[in-house]
Length: 338
Image 1 (cartoon, rainbow, N blue to C red):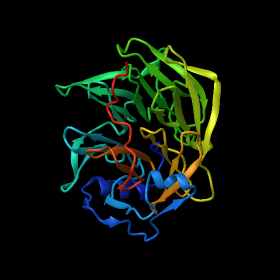
Image 2: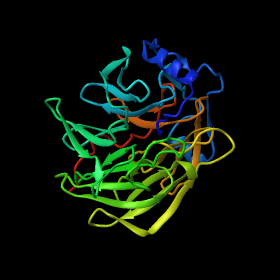
Image 3: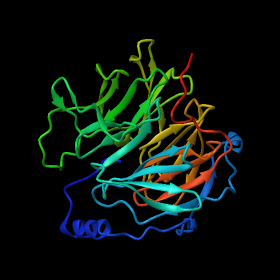
Image 4: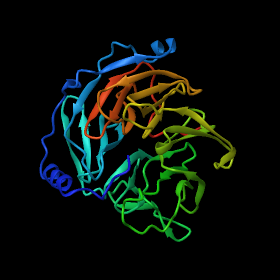
């Protein structure tokens, strides 16, 4: 979700109060709204999730006017989940049985998170307008902060291909934000493993957001949040995109709140993405199989975790939740392919 700055004094006071010491809640069971449910839209959903599966709220009271809860990524060797609180500029940690704690302060309003082939953490930083990598010694390496000498807009989400190349989205900010930007378009970029080459892949999105590969990495999926759909591109051997294959993979708009934001793909190629009214589960061709209705206004991102990668974590504007699924998600870091 894109962070916002032009906010009212009332919202800024609320943000200040939240940043000053919000109370982190533990596991709260089902979402308090009482409307939590799983809608089945096709019989194939049975292979992925049971409609009776409980939808759990793990914490709430996060986020704020400068940005929501975002970027869940599972740290398998530690058995915990990291995620972003953009508004508070904090990296949060959820450990099953232990609850939620602050993992890192001053994250430069980091949004999307992932890990590279070596297991290092990558982050899209809003405040500094860059994509970074945290090294084993804790130092920070800049993956990308400009293109052709002009600063990036506000990197949003990131994914790593099995060859080590890094793909990220960089949406242009909303017109109401009074700030001069070097770039006049929203881009999707690719960075080579040696960080030596940054390539602009697509520049005609309104709001490029969540980004994910199919399991065989033959197709790159990218959300266009403002248009409320997911676009798909075939990946050519050199790692760029066949622009003539650009197509709408799925339209997730509707009368209820929520747009496509963060997105992930499981090992069978099913796609998990927020949209109108909840979190959608789509088959590899974009057919809607079901919708997880968690009762919150928006689904900002999703991520797989647990020992078997069969826990689906999801973030909303103010909370973190989870639900169990039957098919394992694509692990992070992704394994090298032969």
